[in-house]
Every structure is written in structure tokens, then in C-alpha cells.
Length: 426
Image (cartoon, rainbow, N blue to C red; front, side):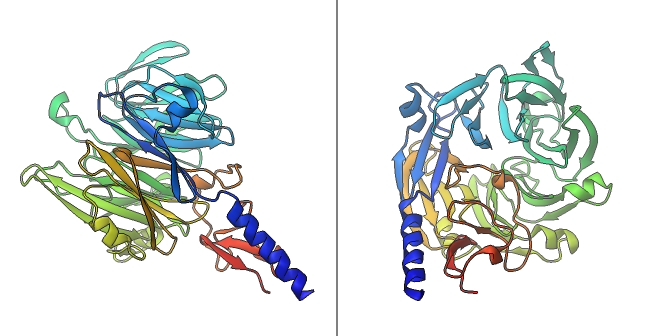
């Protein structure tokens, strides 16, 4: 019996290695107004293609793409900023449709039926005609028709967007303050996703809420680059539940979180990039953030100036860090280096423990990541933090399906926990 169990386990291990576990779509922004955005496709240690969208469709992706999300098993959305479209593709890269006339679109989120996209623009084409806005807006796209069915005006130049308990949380920047006659924004709008109306506006006291915004269940990690002159950059943790309950919901920390991602255990990794026009120089920082602890202690604890393994040293060796990402299915870590912003960038891969596994040449300004599920089945895991349950969080079977209780396994079964293969011996 012992020999049979050993053979069974070895067979499972072989099947695990035979199947693609690491499948990453990397969104390369290209150069603004050059119409040269691209998708790179990375699988199990190598770049399959640095023009994946063109390979799959025989046409360009568009001008300056800046966000990518998975909606369901069959659909992925890409916000293409300067082309004024949201492009929809299948997980194998095939173009399905494009929602047009959402000018200067920025960031995406989805509930599986609708896609919500922020826009710096002042008008949008909807099923009822053209709608005009004094400030920025959020558009709601019905994925059954790929039409904009509703909009909601928010602050000037809205950026990050997240969904929690039927509400959209939108971080505003006011990033065009230098040319549009208004100040930098300090607010997060809370929108009822059903009615597309603003229910609350939270003043964070922090200006220019710009860039990546990661979500760990009820917590958001938001960056502020300051004003690039006198106002220093910083980051903040925003508690969506406390905001809905009219409680204090913001903790500010003295480091930017320019590029941030959610980890398997519900924390955030952040790489900060500070730039000043006064000095013309960049400064970089690396952080691990426990949002629950930050909120509960009012920022007294929960922040560490470190990343696992060699990540900190590897990011410090880059010319221009441009992204960080944790595969929510396996725990493998990815980062990108934009280099000169004008030539080829690089994709880095680390093990879940932070061991550098490889560096791969990609395209211009590689900044946004999407992991495809190992078995091709998407269950929304990329938008949900792992449960904080000792011994059971972050556990998956070899088909990539999340497991609530590993005790259901038979002795000798291999499963994945915290991004590592584990043999069940109980």
C-alpha cells in the first residue's frame, strides 16, 4: 500500500509539472501617442510572445493601455487609454468586442456582469446618447452587449476603482490641476453600483490619489505622489467597511506606494517611486504592509521596509521599477523594469519566498499583470483576499481550485499551499 501511495503521489507530481501553472499576461503600455501598446504572454519560465494580441488577431492592441482584469471564465477587459476604448478578449487572446468612446479611460473593476471604468474625460457615449460631465466619471459597461448603460460623475481625473459590498470606491487625483484650473483632489467617492449614484465622499486629507490601487477584501492600498514639488509623496490604507459605517477609515504612512499588489495572506507589497521636479531625481522604497494591523493600530504598526528574499535588492538594481504583482493562484511574484521608458523593459519572476528565478526582455513600459488560473477556470480569486484561517488559508488542489479544508484529502495527496507544493501526511 505504501508503494502504491508513493507511485500515486509521484504521478500527481508529474502531472503538476506537466501542466502550465504560471500563465501571466503582461500589459506593455508602449509610448504615449505612438499606438504601440502590446501584450506579452509568459508561461512556465519563458516568454511565449511579446506581441500576443497581434499574433492572435492580426492587428494592433491600441495606444497606451493601462489596466487589465479578468471578468469571468471567458472574458478579459483591457482599458486602452489613448485609444478611448475598453477592449475585450478571451483568455487565449482573441478579440471579442471593444466598447468605444470612453475617452481617457484609466482603471477597471468588475462584478462579473458589468465592467466599471474610470475616465478623466468629460463626455461618454451611452445607450441613451452622449452624457457630459464637468469633472471625471465612471462608466458601467454591460458585458452582454458591451454598451455603456450608466455613468456617474465623480471627482476630477479619477484613478483607482474597487468594488466592495455593492459599492464602488473611486480614488480621485485632480492630476490635471496644472492645466485645468482646479486643485488636486483629496477624495474617495463611494458609489452605489446598482443605481450609479454617489452615496458618500470621503476626504482623505491626502492629495493626488494617483496610480495603482490594490484591494485586500475590505482594505485598499492607495498611492499619492504629492505635487512633485513641495508636497511629499505618501501612501494610505483605506478601510471600505469603516467608510460605509461612517467611522474613521484612513491611515496615512510616509512612503509612496506607487506600484502595489495584494499577497496571498491579505497583505500588500509596495514599491514606491518618488520624483521631484526640484531635484530631477527619483527615490525608491520597498514595503510590506499589513492593512488590518495598520487600521487597528492607527498606523503605529503593520508596516515593514522590506520585501521577501532578494526582492528588495533586485528592485534596487532596476533602472526604473514599473510594477509588482503576486500571482493569486500560486504565490509566485513578478516585477517589471521600464528601463529608459523608450526601449525594451524586463519582466522578473521570483518564487513565493522571494528567490529570483529569471529576468526576461519584454516590450516598452511593462506595467500591468494578469495571472490566468492554472486550470482555466476563473472563480474571482484575483479580487478576494485569502481567509485568515490558520493552516487552511491559501490552499488549492492541483487543478487550481481553492480548498476550504485540507482535511478532506487522503494521506499522500499533493496540494498547493501559500504557493508551495505540500504533501498531506495526516
